[in-house]
Length: 344
Image (cartoon, rainbow, N blue to C red; front, side, top):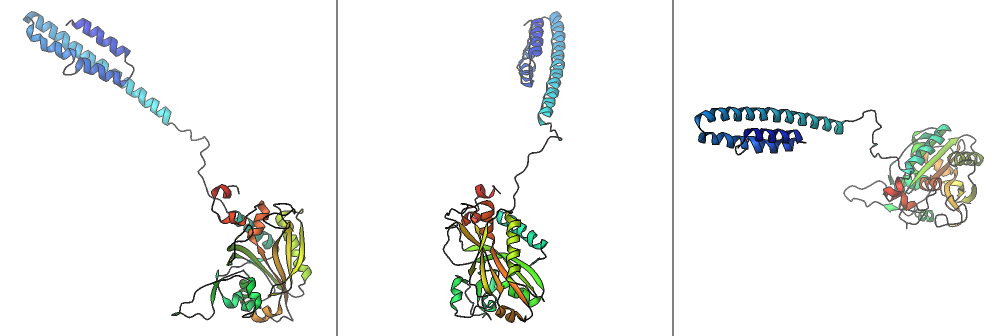
């Protein structure tokens, strides 16, 4: 085997190598146990003594040369690979980041906060009450006597009593936030202004504008010389603050045991613009039942109705939200469907 030809062949292959894999193949071809240099060294024993020393010297020199050249190439390719990797992994810290998905407020919560801000700007404070209520505060303290037909106005979820723990008053899921007005007046002296946001429950069939759970914001104002004009002026001002000056409203008389006289504030349906649809029926939707606080309610909480007057209202937060965002079905608000909720 001609050493000079092997040397030329090996150096040419090393020069043409393109990556570490090529270098590894060249090493195996020439310097491994079965490589060409090893074979040359093994055949030296068959040569005459005068040629054996010369060929052995040349073979070892070639072996060392190839090791050196291959090592240099190996370092060269390794360094280049590291640089390429750094380029690929390099991060521009000044570039805008990718925003991670974040939650946001439910549309009911958004409108609730807007309403609270409006009433707080008019001097109202905010209070809360229990969702599991007693029959006394839900009905009796609000001038709804036992076995009175007026109780049929609210389809109530009653809570089963535990015989081993008898209740002073039957428990229920509150049907409105009005019980909190009685609780609040028991612990606060007039004059007062308060709103009470909260969730309510009624055992009734669901449709586009009714559900078994909903939200109300109870409002109460007690002072001397409060009249129906104050009530109407305040609520009309509120509606314009929430919906803008173009909002269309109207009043109609109604009946509620805890107010006298009783009224309902209706607004033109924003879904159909008053034409009539499945949400409103006839183009109008009732959003705020209200009226002057009945004297019997004042008596139940220890107020003298001869000295104090007041009005109360219980606006349907879900319906106000539907009108705000033109939502045609209340059930969408409780569906948990992100395709719907992500629009707000």
